Image (cartoon, rainbow, N blue to C red; front, side):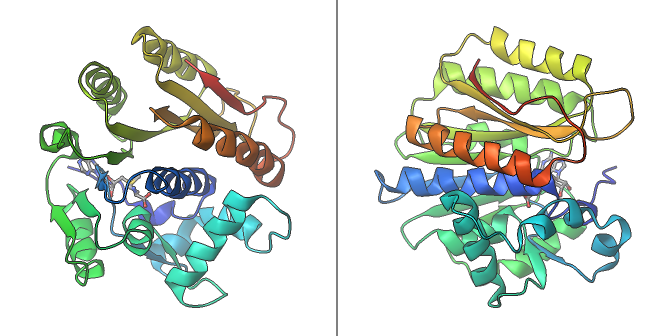
Length: 276
Ligand SMILES: C[S@@+](CC[C@H](N)C(=O)[O-])C[C@H]1O[C@@H](n2cnc3c(N)ncnc32)[C@H](O)[C@@H]1O
């Protein structure tokens, strides 16, 4: 039984990092590929209204998108992300936060194919409704980790793997998936989001990623609080599989800027962009 609802967290600092990386990954791939397949293994419902019960409960977006809405500086990736959110909202003031499916529905063109997985029935039904106009999108009410069987090795593929980690086994599934991607796929870029919960668990996860022994993996980690023993998320990261040097450089600049804008009080842990 799944209880996670992304509406409680939408627009928070983790969504900001993940969606900026997703947008830039797509843009950088489209510089070289006319047509790609996008796969979202854990899609959510796609639209999160700021005045909904979920969003109003914890107001996590105040720690994320709200801190960026009046951004006046020059980082291209942040400015482009804000432009995309405003275009999707059709308004300068954001009325809802768009999830990854809406962002990709907006960015992709008729030559791209989109494949979405969402296991939760309610979220799946909402997503189907929210994407009903997109004829290039296929939406499956299935476990997203089966996506490996659906990859067409001849087409450039971008995958977002964004589990809720409400099941501890998600960390192992992510590690297994990465090992398979590394062993079998040459034509795929993947963005795998992970939460930083505490230093020991995080070090262990990163060590396990390192043990896969791939030279195609980059860690992009944005700490926002001290990694102490308090319960809750201390930051988040992305395991970027086969990202281009261009994308990695963009993310390096962007994460430094996000760290200054989003960090929560005193934090002496620095952002990390490193090959694992
Ligand atoms: C973190 S949210 C996704 C957020 C979305 N990717 C975005 O950026 O807007 C994770 C979603 O995965 C769904 N989910 C959980 N386990 C799943 C599984 N095995 N396969 C597909 N979806 C799953 C949850 O119901 C939830 O909606």
